[in-house]
Length: 112
Image (cartoon, rainbow, N blue to C red; front, side, top):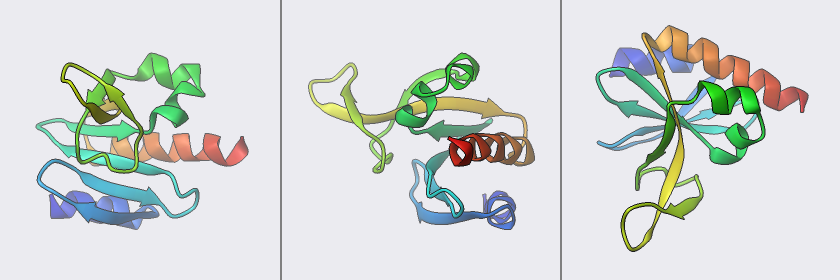
């Protein structure tokens, strides 16, 4: 996973926190937080507030993902009895593809 993190760092993202469940990254230009999930595919979780403000992002999303490690994201009731943090999942074939997508999202955030 370390070489994947190098790609993020080289493209203007700061690794804030690493856990076994996710890696929290911050776009140094916008302050936007995203989570890289250690699945077989490159998966990113974006803040629901960011995604829900843009129909194109909603359409591209794989849907909601819930994870207690998404500390910077809002909570909602999912299948359990208590609230849990959630975000929108996006899947990619490579870390470079994910970085390109996140750069596109950051550009939209900066212009809004």
